[in-house]
Image (tube, rainbow, N blue to C red; front, side, top):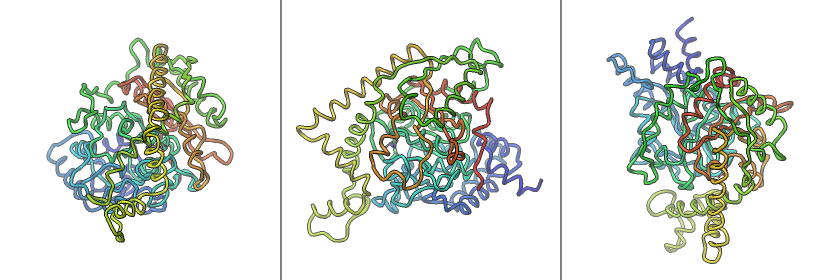
Length: 502
Ligand code: GLN
């Protein structure tokens, strides 16, 4: 095999395989980065990237190769990654998918970006997203939609649609995402890749352009659970710059993934694991083709030793109204900073200060962001606060209580990520139709719980090339348990290894 063929193979491989290839000097970081950049270029029609940092990436790759030659053998040294454009990055624009921040250059790196850079990873660029992470189809980006690499007529999911599409199309083995109400899990599901939203507070939010601060969490999107574990290892951890960052020891996530659960054996490595299936999630509204793929995955997990249990999450239907009050309320407050004064877009024509604010915001924000700001300002206003915001907060607590009760009976919760496979670009014009599709991801977000999506199959008929994801939800700080179950599933199956034709 020529070195060029090797580069092509390695560029489509998982992060773990890429790391092994670099360690064995089958490829250099520079060669790997060149190949990924070539793919990003030839698949530009996907719209996955908003900014490609070719020269800086090659410079980082050269430095990584030099460090490796000098004996540096850090696990992630020289491996390419892309960051969702919601993370601020020094030396390249950070827009959060908004015209408001067109060309914005941050003076610092988000903590997550800084940590991944500090372990030697090479940043290829920034991925497309719904404006300010508001959306579930990536169609709310001010810079155009992203196409699903499996089916170019379909959405990739959102809001981390660019990251999920980039990983699915093998433009890069790993990318960061953020999940406020499903934005890692849902695009991962729709693009047939693996993603984890950690427990709220595990990864620093410092330098993540804020949407809804009590919900926003960063997490990795990659081909496999093992890769997610390796990335989470670097991303997680206390940061004094984020007041909601949790101080606790970070486990070695990737270390025990291969081992069977205590008391289990290699044939049935998940023996003893109790998986709760929320009956409200396998009910009306769940597409048959999604249910079939999810049920087949559950049968596989059962074969691996897990026990399936019927559980209830009775407040599920309240998650959409509660989330679509709390999240816009926080967004309206967070987005007040975009006033045309300090940074961001400023209107050219205005007569006085008030008009400058109004015109800058009217021009800079897209329709969905404006809708959320209006909703948020409304539910927080005097006279409505008690009726809406306070009620939503109470419901949020009840939803969290449902999960606490469920985790008395089971170790993990399993179900669908999305009620349907990816829909067509342009298909859901009504905002409410988009909100309703978040039904299975919002509950864990409201409760601050960790959740994963792993690829488990495809739809049927006209949807035969549209991926389906399985959602696994753990108790607070149950990332290890989640990653372990997902990794064991991926050892026994190959859905995660499938890639679309370029
Ligand atoms: N789809 C949800 C929304 O539009 C969640 C987005 C997210 O997790 N960032 O708010």
